[in-house]
Length: 98
Image (cartoon, rainbow, N blue to C red):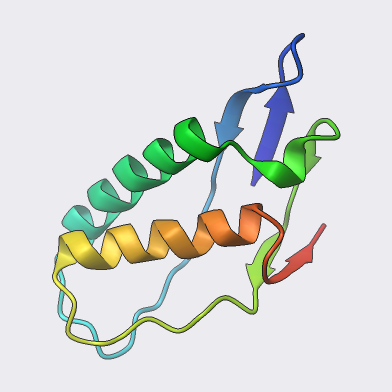
């Protein structure tokens, strides 16, 4: 993941790359999960920013220690919950590998 600030120190570009995401116990359409994830993460970043990037550009290899998600969620709900978990990690919660 990478974050680059603009002149006014607000992030101007956020790139999230997920190599592989394995969801055991979920029966959801991956494309719908991805679309809901992107929409919710965009909303959260616009509304709350990315606190870990407040000091300047940032590249993260991994976010771990995030909360588990309940099985049985719809694709939309699963994408939203994944985005919330990632945003929590970008907000300084969880373990970060740089």
